[in-house]
Figure 1 (tube, rainbow, N blue to C red):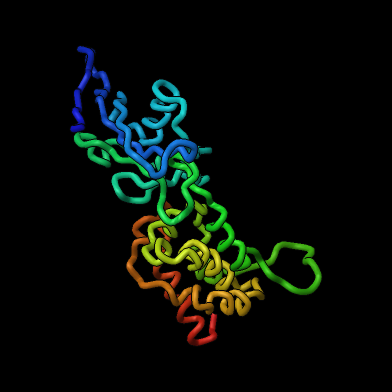
Figure 2 (cartoon, one colour; figure 1 turned 30 degrees about the vertical axis):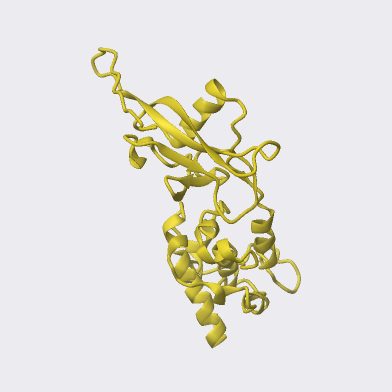
Length: 252
């Protein structure tokens, strides 16, 4: 079905135009379907509305059975990561006008993780990899009586990778991850990087040993899909390369 975009100003001076947009959603009900199929929905939206707004309109006004995750709706929680027009994005940060409303806007679940229903995937394999890289500060000795002091230069060393919101957009955009469910994936490596290069941490060697596994950092093929997909603008591929260099030089 070809989408039609109809501007409706209702004759009001200064009125914000609205459009009729086709949202093509990949639907999957494990109790009835053997594989996903697409269903089209017509929604009325402003150009500056988000894809999440369109999904809300479908869910609340047309088909209450549509299932997807979302929480804060402000690009902080990362729960509404999905494939929009073939690219991993956050539905709450993707504007209708930025994904060409002249054509159907396709919305699918992210790839590489078990599909549960519609746009919802099982995130446990993703979080298993995250937990395995020890994503927490490792220190020895007595608990200090004040915060652990760090210079701005030391903080800058890993500042970029602190921005991760665990949305899985980077990991599920990775071709290696799609074809190898054992690969840690970019997000786990990014979160290991955040502590490996933290001057206050003492667990860097352990994390590097974990990532030196055959399914660890060396599985990266440097396609930059992860960097392109990150909604927070993290230089994911660069972080992975820095972890590789740390393994080669044992200096971090």
